Image (cartoon, rainbow, N blue to C red; front, side, top):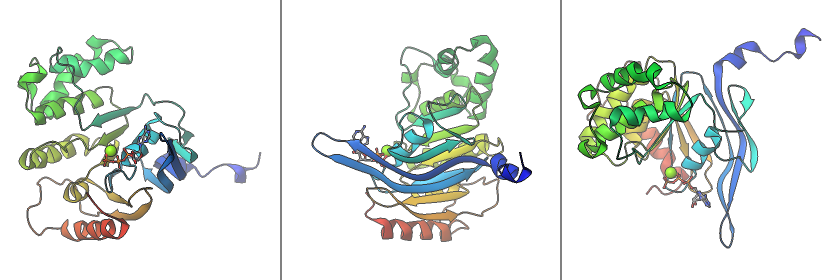
Length: 268
Ligand SMILES: Nc1ncnc2c1ncn2[C@@H]1O[C@H](COP(=O)(O)OP(=O)(O)OP(=O)(O)O)[C@@H](O)[C@H]1O
Ligand SMILES: [Mg+2]
């Protein structure tokens, strides 16, 4: 075999996610719904990428495709260089609704991920407490979900998504239901947790400011069917330790993302 036929090694190592020419249709009751149309992008390992777009433009669908929960009608999704066929073991997911089990305390909610994966609980108990400490709620390890605030519950959800140390984290509007101050704080904490970890993150949000503050890149989608209308780099150095109030280094990118959203369709 000639050396020339080998794929470029550097490319293989750097790329975590590759979405090529993806179109996705859902069969509705009376007609087909095209959720995504010809979406292509790739994400390097360790990148934090936010996805912005109007309601119904296919953001959650895109995450489902990357997670392997849904198969694209056309096009291809690759994770770690291979076509995604089933939900990967090396991923964590966080949703808007925290999906905590009311009858399990915080630690046991985190460890459910370990149980589902057939791993040994005792091997992960220390890691669970460690994650709770990193998210600032170690004193609530034994608290039941109803004793926790919305922000604390989402923190437990983040710990549950990270307990098996996945290299890819998919987050779908995780902080949408939180008040502004809690949201700013949890954003900073999220960066502290995943910032230096080398994890790749895809983060869906409706907040332009949040998208920009967190990300290395912001992907902006048009109204349905969702197409990519902008790919904005946010070259603000890390660590980003404080939520920006007023005019800041993030402002030009917020403006650019807002303009792309306006160009791409309504934003509700
Ligand atoms: N399982 C499904 N069956 C049929 N249609 C679906 C299904 N899931 C999503 N859709 C449709 O596909 C389109 C995209 O939905 P999706 O949930 O991905 O949008 P979204 O950008 O995440 O919206 P939001 O910001 O409101 O969460 C919508 O029109 C939705 O009604
Ligand atoms: Mg959604």
